[in-house]
Length: 377
Ligand SMILES: Cc1cc2nc3c(=O)[nH]c(=O)nc-3n(C[C@H](O)[C@H](O)[C@H](O)COP(=O)(O)O)c2cc1C
Image 1 (cartoon, protein in one colour):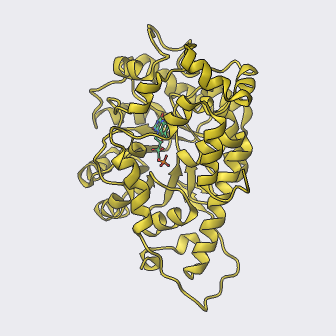
Image 2 (cartoon, helix red, strand yellow):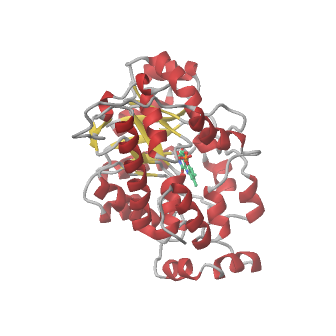
Image 3 (cartoon, protein in one colour):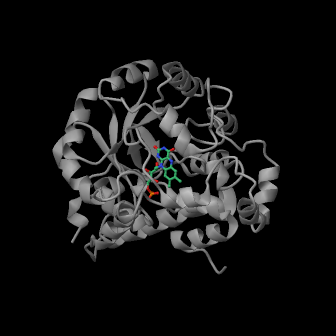
């Protein structure tokens, strides 16, 4: 492998290092994957205005997301089973994010637990909540996130039922992995991954095992979500969650203007325009296509963030130009993690920072906080 210069380079490297079932888990969308592809393709269609003869010294990408300082407007998305891309993946990614000065969001469906991540970080991270039918368990998760000092709760709204991802079903995805000949082969051909995995004890869902009652089949994500996730979740539920949590609240998974307007009554601090990385409703619009409409619908009554399809710093710049106060990356950091552990996550963040900084300058702006729709052609 030559020099790593792009997120696509990290993806290639991850494919060589991560067993197929887990690489595919990251690189997949629901059904035909049309929304997964649209997230990236629609970014590529947006054009920037090249400006010249502007003073480009003293540039800064620093800004704030939900009132917290960030070195650039890019957080790490909550992603399930991150500890299967690389041993202790959530702990490594959280450390990389902390050193970089951007938020790390831990998924409910992580391998390393809230307490594991808290034990290796010194600044607060964010916690993403899935609401289960078992409310005692949910209350307990919220309390654990509070006790760990998490500084924002990201409530995911777009996964009451699980979208079907064909690759996962064909691969027989589970955590810990099964030991059929096919799975053994997929792992045996990735010896470095196996060695690292043998050195850790974290190989199943750390936030859940030992905390939830009556967990019958946790290893299969699809059967567990079908059994445990609450399909009745409604706008009304946000009230008790907000009250129990008592801190910054971010609503994740809004893709419709009507839902965006409805979210204003909840008192949330931010919403994330998102289609779950194209993993839920295949055939829905891309996030970046819906972003300006949602920004127009809510005005400045709530902070608008977005995720889905960001593969470069230019993409972040375009999202900010369209009104996003912050963005999130899912696959880009997962590919970095699979490619090279903590260093790979840092590399992903560095690639994005450099691209964003140079592109911003060539658009004639010095501060990310000054970027608006005027930089778009
Ligand atoms: C492998 C994987 C696992 C994910 N797991 C979760 C999760 O547990 N909770 C959640 O809210 N979103 C989850 N997502 C969605 C991400 O938070 C985010 O919305 C999406 O990845 C952004 O798109 P991008 O990957 O194109 O950057 C997951 C995404 C991926 C790729």
